[in-house]
Length: 362
Image 1 (tube, rainbow, N blue to C red):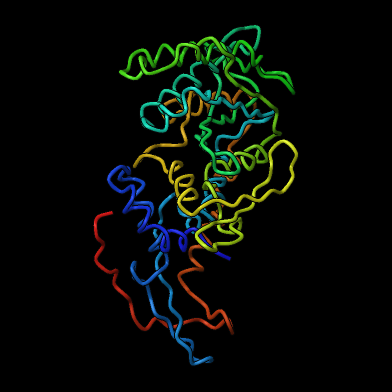
Image 2: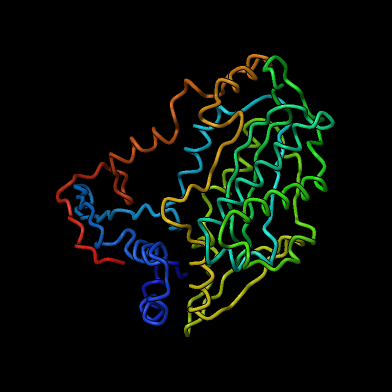
């Protein structure tokens, strides 16, 4: 079975030769990192197993957030640290999708457009929730940017995890939502569109937009997703999933890549075969700008407003879950410091450290 790294190594040089001068530095760096991940280029260690009398090589990972090999364990670590955000009661997933007419502009101006998408959607959700007909108070929101469909086409949208309720303006009462309802999506969609337009008008990008986009309906979705840690587990994959995992790549042959995906509407497993160049294009359009923050916290969940979250927790008689327990991921990392032989399970002896090879600019 092929891997993303192998596709980059085989077809990346031709892709860079053809498009390198037009590519963003973040895209070039992602390609280089993934190509070199867990290879001798990044250095590593050589271990020896006495019972087996064999040497084992362990190469370093690239730690690039777009690398399929480097995102496997981080979801569990995030889940552990986010338990302090949990409140009793229902939670909701609210999703804001950027219309088709704005996607080409977003792909060309990711930093600006993604920031506006975050700000306008968060402001719209809180603005509507402030209405006494819905919540009448301040929400807690954690938002995650997601840019792909299951077949890797470009589809930027933001998911928000929101507890069902809010803190009153004076901070003295918790105002619960209904068990299965947070806000109406029709007025939320209109408010989202208006706030996005207002913020885009403050940039040089506004004249580039087709005016018809402000007359059409914008897609917003809101659904209950459970309580407590189950709600966090629902959100975690959106944070650490990359556009495609290695186990979905079925074949690399004759310059074409075949991969598997699940159709969202029917749940049917489908297969797509595309030229390697098209595969790379689809994958790279989901590489985020360097240091771009794809997970953001608002209102009660904002780092500067955690005293309000404490007040909400006090009103609800709730305490952070898992705040004083050891992290299972930390324990796993400690065990990783004592590598064992994959054959016999014996502790391995470090015999040599391999230094990384000099890296050329991407």
